[in-house]
Length: 294
Picture 1: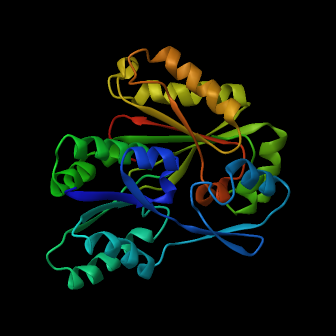
Picture 2: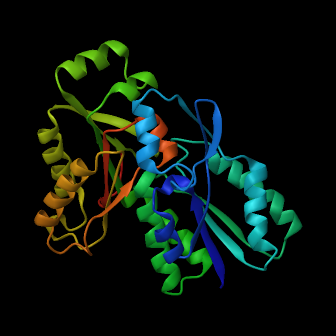
């Protein structure tokens, strides 16, 4: 193997998916009611149990992967003579890329003959996962580590992320929505629509009344932005936090509207890291589109 492709657990792909694509991952950390846990793709606490605990009032907090953890992770490959292309969660959301870069510099001193490249995905959740799959495709086609890293840098802003939530409780709890706005929004049945901008930050875009309307609107955003419009022939991923039926409704509309899409829509679970902040009730849509410029 010429090099190892790796990412953090915030890519929100299943363990089986990562193994099938030969992508290694390093887990984030979170706490539930004071207990330290690894964001290990639902192995320790299955996602249905995780979100049920949140619904029942469990307190969740998250923490970043530190430099020492990255050093150990990278070293596990370098000492076997394997170079590493590591892609991580957007700097618009987390500081882990900086920790990974510090670790890269440290291990390069011990393994000067080896290559470690760290890329800021400017992506999150299964949008990050969609980017990882695209990089893995290029690796499998024979791209070198340098070529694959440059492809990622050149193309990461074409990954679109659109989110909506039908439950504002955890947005209020985390301070992303004021209590007053959250109460009013809940009474009016408002579902906020958000996306990730060109700096990799999660930005509120619209306040849409009723779940039915926001589902139609998120599909309309794909119609507006997808590469080749309704003739889109790439992959489409959706992630959800304990609201599979809502995700399936979005997926069904997309499959009906985009007949040339590559395969079926892949529906994933939002993992424990991002789910700790969104809580249940969030659906996120990801596809390759026009370049993010705002």
